[in-house]
Amino acid sequence: MTEDAIRNALSVVKYPGFSRDIVSFGLVKSILIENGVVSVGIQIQTRDPEVPEQIFKECHEILDEIAGDPEKVQIGIDIQDPPGAANTPGGATDKQSIPGVKQVIAVASGKGGVGKSTVSSNLAVALSRQGLKVGLCDCDLYGPSIALMFGATDQQPMADTEERIIPIEAHGIKLMSMGFLLGDSAPVIVRGPLATRYTQQFLQGVAWGELDVLLLDLPPGTGDIQLTTVQTVALDGAIVVTTPQEVALIDARKAISMFAKVNVQILGLIENMSWFECEHGTRYHLFGEGGGQREAELMDVPLLAQIPLDPDTRRRCDNGEPVALLDGAESPIAAAFQRAAEALPVSAPA
Image (cartoon, rainbow, N blue to C red; front, side):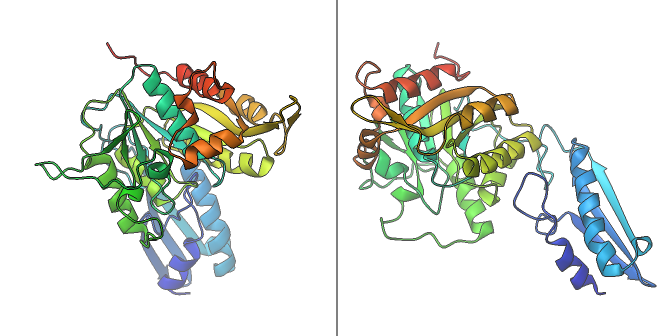
């Protein structure tokens, strides 16, 4: 047994609700091996008693096997109250508000390919149609799509006199996305620390101005970017997007659990691709039926909308004209997004 071997073994223990491990989070503060006994010191800042219990249990399971005897493993966990309201793995300081922005809402999904950016774009438009001042930040550095969905791929943001990024405006929405900074075929090749820095720049280094609500289109999963967001920004809530099929719902549960661990309220679930409706009115539930409703009831959160799989919605996204720009009377899809927007607890302008 060596210190490096113990540290490597503990690197498979994930922080509950996140995809990162306790070693990369810097929670393992000491490892001492003396007379065949392993002593590990872990420091956690949390108010959730289940977090240290789970970490303690998983660490013991791994180290007991290595040591060959549970009596030769000692795990001490120093549990501290997090500063301010933050309840995050790294023990971040108080979360910051974004100057001029009244409310910040994250749009998340546990799984990719469920149409989260389509939902984010149309929700932003639907909120704007209510008379709100709306911003949309595309936090998906590796697969940005907001620039395309708003027909603004040919635009590049400028900087103001304070060296803050001036967001692009399209369809009345203030936008920021990596898609404005790179060409269509240019990949974003950055590792965790740099991805974190970009995310912080998008959140705090953009001149958003006065907004009633800023939507954050998060990448799928529960990794570095999601962690940076919940650690540094005072979120007013989160919306989770899923399809009705179980494989997507499993990951949606992980996203809901992540937000619960950091005390972010789930404002509701949106079920996308709920069905495909033929011209003669028959509905085909291609990805299953009722999964979103059942999950919302199980998690005790509202089901904000069921959005059908619709070719016109896809065409409009590709052409930079979100379907929510249409009147509810013209499009049942637009009407569904409008109802979802109306169900959100967003403050109306004075």
